[in-house]
Amino acid sequence: MVSNCSSQALVSKYQNIPNSSIYATTNTAIESGLPFVSFRPQYIYGEKSNKWDYVDWYFDRLVRGETLPIPAPGTQKVSLTNSADVASLLASVLNDEAAAVEQTFFNCGTDELCEYDEVAKLCAEVAGTELNIQHYDVSLGKAKFPFRMTDFYVSPDLAKSKLGWEGAKNSLKDDLKWYFESYKARGGMTKDISFDQDKEVLGA
Amino acid sequence: MNIIKADLADESMTAADMQSLLKQPFDYVWDNSSKGAVGAGKAVIDSAKEWNSKLLTYVSSAGIYQPNDVFPMPETTPIKESAGQVQYEKYGK
Image 1 (tube, each protein chain N blue to C red):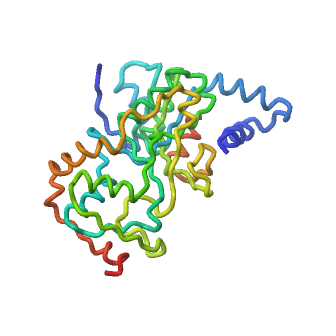
Image 2 (cartoon, helix red, strand yellow):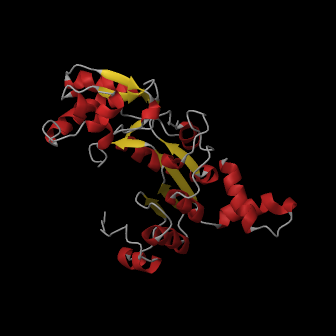
Image 3 (cartoon, rainbow over the protein chains, first blue to last red):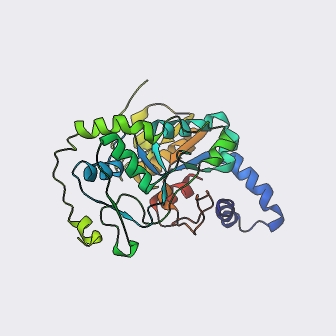
């Protein structure tokens, strides 16, 4: 628990203070210490970011006619966030600094989640390719798959309610158009890629 | 706007080093680089404390979460205590 985390740290710092004083002390400590806020982003992409591995994984296979090995059941959700929306989240602390410091920890990601299979379908549409997905048993391992084997996603609800963040202005579906152009410009169509690890989990 | 380039992966950087690079204090600090409370990361926090900054905003990672089957993962999800980002969060807080 976040509240427990911060309380524990303060309790250990002020362990000689009687219990009845802890909450008053906590407030004083927060006011007199460094006002601190921490955002916890997930998977990021963006025209000016350097994070290309996640979505490239899909295009690498689609444009080469390779089967996409996706850990079963393929309905796991992922938060893929445009870096411009990450930036607006980071700036939203200025909407209410006191509320930001009081909460301290914020998830940082789009409010538009996609399923692993859905990302594949969107990419195939943009690239104009066939889509061949094979779901494989997660016990076989991750191979080169860019996301977790199981669900691992956050929601930015606290940033919305406490910082007045308006939500993501970009969506993966729209962004994949420029993303695919970027993929081609970065040499994605012609680079050498080994699919050996894919073949292992596909049993091919 | 003034851009100063420095190696923020430098584990030997101190708060004094950072302050001599920046030449002035800052009320608002965003740290989108540090992976732990060492070197330049520690220097950012120490400097913000010395400056009495109004706010230090850190970019941690959701990778520190150890989910317990609650999705979407709330901010109260258990975290990996050994992660560098957690060390930073604890030192900054």
